[in-house]
Length: 581
Image (cartoon, rainbow, N blue to C red; front, side, top):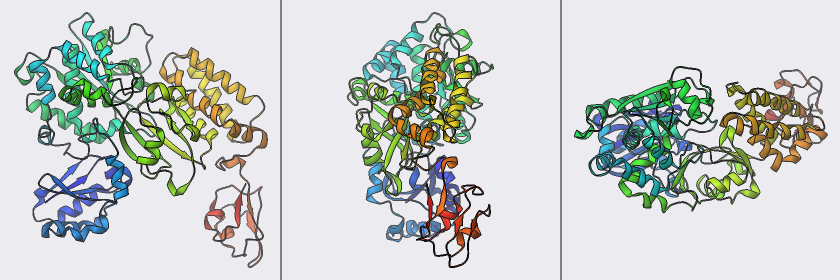
């Protein structure tokens, strides 16, 4: 039997490395132990899979170091009944069985540090097919038939960008992968690189062949150290097998491969800012036109796509563009990967065909809201996206339908919020992010986002005033119209959508000085219900501000002027006497 421990970043954070080391200590034959990447079930990490030859026999979840000896003994004796209490539940298994996986098809199933694992599952066969039987124009046509659109957020037709770079004048061309994944709550690209780096490399090599590039560059943020390490290892392995470098697979096609670690600026997700950073300059967007296909990296024809876009390419080449376009909707073909996070029962990576609804993802696959709370909204597209309320849960997932709500598909972040989330504070959170990440090149974004943030901060602190909502809307539209790049043009989206769908919360903050979600600290009032208080004094003992007074076995009270609203009293009260209004 083989024991495979999931070691993506999520698994390692949950203790997978310690689990691996503990299992290794109890094994006589250590060759039966290996690793894999993230299967996407982040809510169940650490995950250990047990295989007999190539068939998975058992998936163990939330494994601890203390379980290691039992796992080693069970696999050695062939008695897996010893592991029944660690076995994944049928309900949690549905998280995967209800998905359709293309970009994530190898994630959590192969060893990302071993090229042979990738090759054994048709790895690099698409590249061989392209180099031996297809012209660059054939490749572009197949991508056109597939309907693959850029998965980085804009949804621009991939074939069109490839074709433009192909036809651009000049012998020196560059292919660039945008792995500068900066949206809060998004981790799709990181997981693909960590779990299936050769799939990215193969997709990029095919793209380089199609446009005529002799250099491929992955621009990845430095905050992804594990992804960088595994990608570097994969590049060396591919070079050793003649899959990268001169005369690949004995053909006339040559392509070098390198990694550029970015400093983590969100604006570098915009392709021209990324190019500036890649050239060694400060990451600031360029005026367009010219577009990168005409004058990109070092002002040479260049093509930029994100990780997920390239992760679909080899599958499309092997299975045909029509197979990919058969999935999805008329306007949005194929599958899409989402990072499902927030107040959700089953958080992780989800890949579904376009055309499913938000309800399908959040409730059917994600299992609904944690602690049986009420769903309130979902933030789509990160800081550039918007909040979609409960009455729009049946919105179909495709570029046009999501765009009609005021949100965007984005790269695939899906942050779920419940009844305890303040939508005004949520808008402030995302605007704080974009204001800090603005490169400062254009006045609308540099100054406008700061002024909006000041207004939002004033509202959540209880100092909102009449006209603030209207002023926010005016600033939003001015920034959208005047900003130079996508960061500024989309920064107002979280504010506009929360005003559109949750205007009553803004009004409550401004007029009533109350936060309906009871999240904004400055607007909360802590009190003790005399009918429930038994005089145990526990709240008084735990209060760091000495704001609670009273006598044992008599009613206690809170001095609201001294109260710092830390919530300690409510947390320790066993009788529900502490109330928040």
